[in-house]
Length: 234
Image (cartoon, rainbow, N blue to C red; front, side):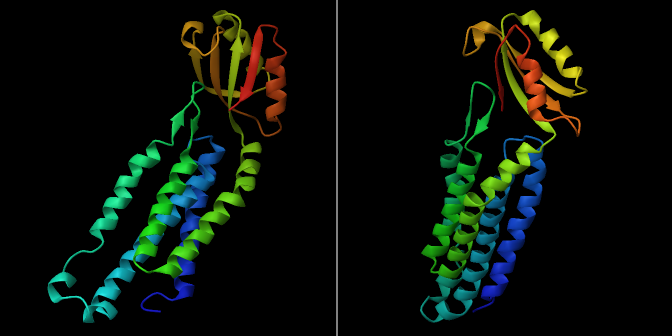
């Protein structure tokens, strides 16, 4: 079919999904905002736009050339699509929020929205095969790989823990308790009571756990401190 066969398109989108997923796994294990599925969806959407560009180029010089005037054929018809891809970024940015606990949410939603816009461009150009292939890959990523992403996070050595405690001075006891389990502390973000969501001071600890230490063990140890009022893994 034209320049790209069904198998060729399937291969290109599949490789894009694989490469994006490999980078996303590393980001997810390190607890970065954009994780496994987000990278996969964005990479698949980008691959789809390049396939669409190839399709439009071939159609303009081939089947469509008989019905399109010569002056129109020299026009870059993809410029409208480029504006859609750029413009949808503003809409996607509106779905991304940063919570009071410094969690970034909505990245996968924004990526899915952008990829959906790319699919709409393919459908509008009449390139249904590419749109259906990418739709299948994106649905597979969102539905099936959500379980794999949770599994990766549960076995990650990097963890962010949100802790509320009674007094600011208590943070030294918490740090001492964490280090007693040979846990490495990368960063501590302290928020005083008057700026926090609750009347208690709180902190977010970025930790790297030893191989034989589970998330539960560290969180239980912190929860046993009398001054700790709340604890949550982010």
